[in-house]
Figure 1 (cartoon, rainbow, N blue to C red):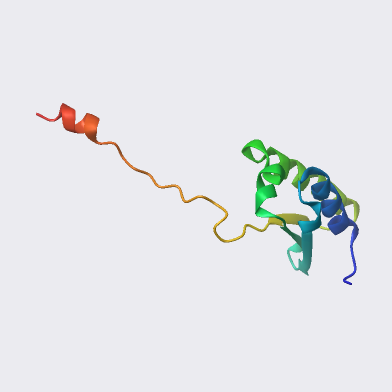
Figure 2 (cartoon, one colour):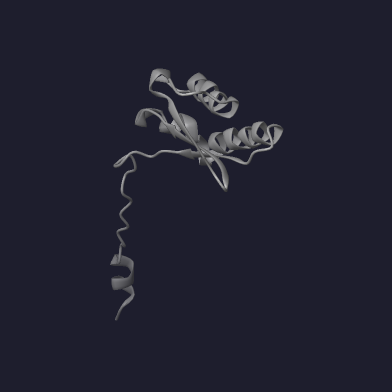
Length: 104
């Protein structure tokens, strides 16, 4: 089993508490010259719980994670892995009937 770090455990603890499928929550931790990156993998059905309305929940988790990182003199960022096809493609259809009515 991979070694767990305080920041990684923190993310898993918080996310498992708010999702419907806590057993599907997994994290990867990578360190480079920019700092620590924690990538969060979760059940696609739980994406809304973690992101929250207008991203407020994700923003709050990131803010708390930065505080945990600062305590350990590290820059910590969170990336929420988005599986392929999890977003609905937003197609933009323009209704030109009003414009056509205005043309003479």
